[in-house]
Image 1 (spheres, rainbow, N blue to C red):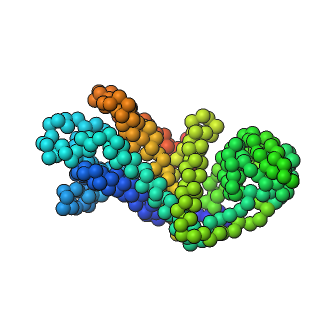
Image 2 (cartoon, rainbow, N blue to C red):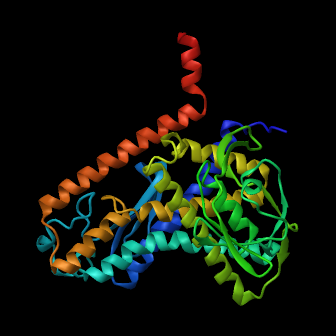
Length: 378
């Protein structure tokens, strides 16, 4: 049964309810580590543009909400330009310079910058740990229970009872791992190592490419092997001390899947129209929120991982770009020249704006806008 997409007001509330706390967590990571190292903070903003509401704390930090809630920032003492290059540091009074971000050693600056993405990954780990504490950890052994006829698995002779050890040269611990790796490779030939009667065997099936439709009628291109598990998923209760390690492992798997998906798009194995932007994120947040709290917090965890991962990309203007520059500074024992940094950040800003425009056009296309315009014109 195809469900109706929630109304626009519901989508907006769900999107803001998912994104704004994650932005706060990200920026608070920067803020709190900066405070540990004695860096002053002038502004802590959720959103960009004109201030909608705000207050100033006893340390002089202005906490505010901007009218465009698609991100946020912390302006530390000494950040006198948007690219945070530390121009004119020598012109600051000594007491201000002592609290300046750019007056700190490069390793402290790197930790402050890395703390934002790290906070997002920690938030996702805590959400998954809470899920595992409430419902348990899903466990399904990677053992073939049934082989569907006329499929990739049948073509290479997989049989019921085979225990899959690796897919595409990646070890698997559960049937969910098999499903996730296979679904990311529609139409590709993969290497599968499995165990049968105590022997290790290897086959190389070409996965089928199928189009799946979710609860809201959206289509996804996925790979299929053609096997079913030997048993249904069970939910295993674990001790409190195991929750965080298990949640961390799950977060690592999700992050790896994101990295792999991005690499497939870059290398042309997946079409560019699979890149989504803020509008697509809003739609997904609204749809998942309409299904219940569990689904909503699950997508919040995925958004948090995505936010942390994207910010670690080595693109100027993002945290990863700053970290790359600090690595160069640590090797050279001095930062790059102001002119070089300025041109890098201009290029990074242009790249981000181009990506935002491109993903927005993709989002509009996924909503059927271009098809409707074509129908009107033709």
